[in-house]
Image (cartoon, rainbow, N blue to C red; front, side):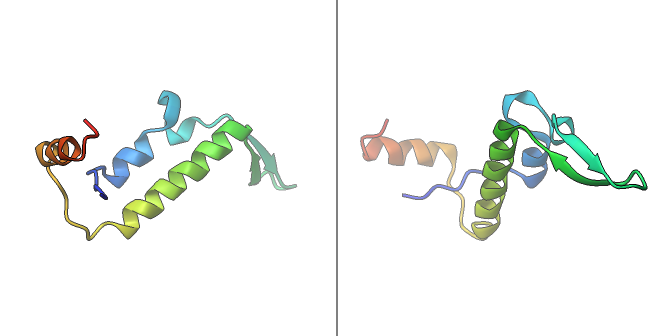
Length: 84
């Protein structure tokens, strides 16, 4: 059973695991001779979280046209399947 949960893109962009927002990464920037940021070094845990977030956004985009299920209907289906 596939269930689509209604989460907006803006919510995902504001929310970051551990309470951080996307603007609070602990990365270190690499700059060129002109002082422009060209690259960033991220701690591995943040990099992996960003990859997971990117995957989640891709799944949301792929499923945007699927019908939604109310929370009550979801609970009913989960109970019927013996999951709840």
